[in-house]
Length: 196
Length: 196
DNA sequence: GTCTATATGATGATAGAC
DNA sequence: GTCTATCATCATATAGAC
Image (cartoon, each protein chain N blue to C red):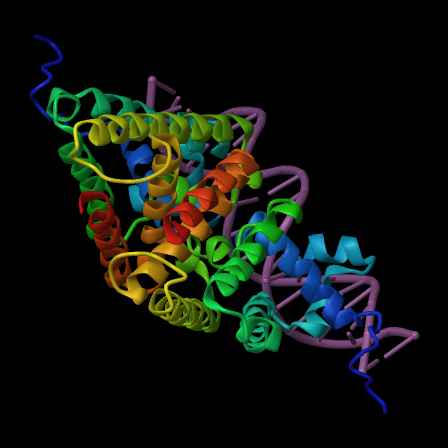
């Protein structure tokens, strides 16, 4: 087979750029990283990046589009989709907690929301889809969770899902400004309320 | 009297700059507005701003410092400080809802958290103080509120305060990305849980 | 005391070399 | 197909005019 799915090839330049740009985006914001930053890290000239991603808009849109693909893939993995609701919720929390270990990166939404109006339109559209699909997924998890008695909350699943996700996004931002402690405190509070 | 507190004087240039910069900061982010934007709006050359605020760091720090002064002033107003806890909480919600009417501005924390590492150190320090004092104030409100039976929640007042504030900050960001609806949904959920 | 002309550097992007 | 030399523009900031 020509492209074995089990073997991890060294990423090509195009992917390396995307990985690097994604990291900078989540650590510094979209308007605070440049082609120079990327080029220096990769040992090429800034203009080389333009070959792979003609404009910064293209690069930004590619980052969000990939995160959306990843979300769909993750959500549909048997190891996630087949879990009971409580474990699905914990899997979501694990994703956010994982950001802490990567230089306290904020989540995609938290990285782009404040600068939203300065983003290219395709990037805005992808981010809206990302947030909508994530919220819908969690609402479904919460609905089943309450029906089976595994999760407890008042109000509609959709409202609770929106609340939980804004809280998680905000919690990573607080971790950035202070330290990991308030993130753990807030997540602890979320779990306390949902699982009590 | 030379400076009557009841009469609203037309703001001087220094204050006009600060007002304008604050608006741009909350609508576009710190790294997405320039002295040119300010100068064009004020009908002067960009360099004129440098007379009033020598560097952009100075300007940014002045914005956060003023918000911190405002927070302390607001918190200590008799019309706020003397309210019962439930009404104090509603007063806080009113502040956030008020942002929606101003072009869906995010809150100060939500505007700066993602770009935090690119901010000048004094600005970072002021923002940490701002967030800490606001959280401490709310924790106190929540503590008294539960003691008097006006507010209901599990966990410590400090944890609940941190959770509520990250949620509100995130809710304004969602309003920016989508529309006012999810903000209202999330705030409704918060009230439902605390006042039930 | 207030603002303008100007400098210096970074930015995103183009045209063309290898 | 991949990258580099170069550009036009915009950024913040200084020195000095009024």
